[in-house]
Image (cartoon, rainbow, N blue to C red; front, side):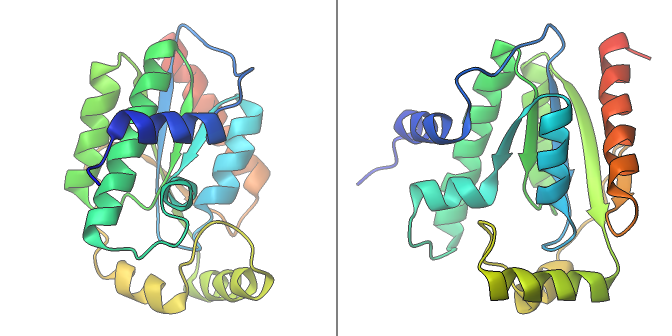
Length: 198
């Protein structure tokens, strides 16, 4: 069956976008970047509550579209294309969006840079990091508890760490093993600066 982007985007919006979400004259796309276990999803949820914003989490989108994912290149392409379509729709409505995905490769990030620009939204890039031992413990605990939408484990982390590319644009780097409340406020302040243009 051919991929239906509009149907896929509608499915994701119905699942992930609260009907009561507010809009703003200053939409912002917060693009998360970081390896599995680096704290992207936790930070994303905290930001969504503070701003408020909608979190589009690639792992949840994948499970919504593919209940038994195979993580093939074709499947991943569909997931990311659907995420981009939903993000674009929300930004054009004036909704703040946090895109929670690894976003490790620059050409993939460039698609999001362009998307934000064409949607008339400010772009804020946030890279999450943590010491490897902390990440390993998080991934093991997550697997043991069956928490979260991600299936990534330590083996996946090691493989993906080899493909991470430097972010060429200005961005915030957040070590999530430190005070997360301070990190959240740092990003929130950056979002507010986007609104004032300073």
